[in-house]
Amino acid sequence: MSEAAEALTLVWKTLGIEDHPVEEVRTVTMRSGVRPLNTSTEELVQRLPRLLRKGDADTMPELRIKGTLGEGGMGLVELAEQLSLGRDVAVKRVRGESPSLSATLILLREGWTTGLLEHPNIVPVYTLGRNDDGEPVIVMKKISGTSWLEIIEDPGAAPEAFDAEDPLSLHVEVLTQVCNAIQFAHRQGVIHRDLKPENVMLGEFGEVYVLDWGIAVSIDDDPTGRLALAKEVTQPTGTPAYMAPEMVKGYGEELGTHTDIFLLGAILFEALTGEPPYSGKTLFAVMMNAHDCPEPTFDESVPPELAAICKKAMARDPEDRFESAWAFRDALHQYRRNREARRLARQGDDRRAEVVDLLDLERSGHPIEERALYKTFGECRFAYEQSLEISPSNASARDGLQLVLEGVTDRELNREAHKAASLLIADFPRPNPEFQQRLDELAEKLDARQEHYEELQQIRHDVDLEVGRHSRTLFASVMGIIWGVSSFSLAFAIEKSYFVLSYPRMMYHIVSLTTVVALATYLGRNHFFANEVNRRLILAILATFGCTTLGRFLGWKMELPILSTMTMEMLTYGTVAIILAVTVDKRVALAGVTFFAASLLSAIWPPLLFWFFATANVLGMGLMVWIWWPEEGEKAIC
Image (cartoon, rainbow, N blue to C red; front, side):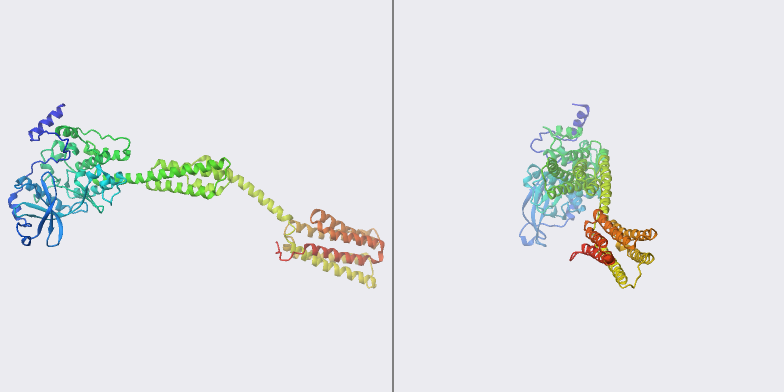
């Protein structure tokens, strides 16, 4: 045995603490002596109202005992009816027929302390009184339920309001509520000193109560003198299997809220392992173990985060423990959030595996259902994102989200779905330069393709004979009318000798006609030049008029016969029509045939030349109107 152990053992024996086996009763509370009050205990008890009286029930002033609810080391709890309100209450008194003044004072102080602590997780004290034997009694709310210790040993014993199928969540939830009660008590300057699963009750409707404040002490001075003070503690007090090191020494000056924090950690240890932190064959062995305070150890089944919380709470040095019960509670809340985050991350992993299988199947050449892929992907992504929203530091969820986004993005890039890929890349938890580069390359490729496509579309538009069809029909109609009227008028005037045939007059005729056609083309250019093919057709016709004007002028200067010049002019019209048929619209060849026929007939019957000329003009333009005439129900394409 070490020197420290020998010294402590000597101190314990000096204090009268007897060593004995603890195998059967591991949770027995060690109680120390109590500081007497300024007023005698007997006088204080006599001042209390009498709540019970022996004899007929009708003479009882307030309570009627109905039975026993339970008993502990020094206390007996009975079931009573509060006659004035017609309700059942719990009545606690010192066990035994002649309780000692020390036990009586302990009960009084428990009543005063618990009465000070009005909190949902602490059993309410209704009043403090005495029975007919002059013994003090505490009247409390009657609670029913199951001890937390029983539930640790058998989770199936938990009330229906608690999730017995997930014991770990149950224990964390209960301990969270215990922290609320302890934090409240600390705010009132009170420390419990005997926190253990046995002193926590779980009600059938989800209530959690911290019981047995019998050895609670105040860390602040109490002017009333009613509360036991921590600084007056001179020997070990509490349950050895759970004690903090400072409790084992019995130095009141070392006690504080950190002591209860240690006990909260000790409760968590038992909830995780099923056993209290310290054990041994004898009381001294257990207390020595508590004094040495070895770091708790856990098997692999215990979540590391909870193990870390327990180790911090049970640190030997109070400075290394949680600063408050709420800090301990917040750590539990964070664990619960992280646990839910991990559950969601695992759910995301399962869905990601399904997404990977679908992508592999598609890469192997098997068709997959797009809707099924994106449904699974959406569920996977949602699970990861919810996990990260709960716990932003969850590396597993972040990595999983990165992988599934990269997998689906790779698919979309291969399918050249730029928009979908860009949206996915924007949501990457971590930037990936490789994917960004692939996206940029795809954008350049698609831009070039789009530019090429637009060029092809423009070419298609320019050579599409359907574009401007109405305008061409109108142009041919106007040309046919102007040219036909002028040609037939000329033929008629020449036949009737109203018009003397000469080059100057024929020049006037062609120049006037060309001017009118050119002016009409200019005014209607926005309609007639709907695309390149229209522009070329109409400009070709205008160019033809220009060439025939030049032809007449050359014939004049070369003193050729007018009829010869006009015959060759019709041949020119036919040639231009054939060239347009070959290069633009093969149907225009019909118009060319009429001019070739007119030219041939004029060579055979020169006197009828102008009639052949006029007929060819009307037929040529008429054929163009016919071949370009929009079909029934067809809309103009401009």
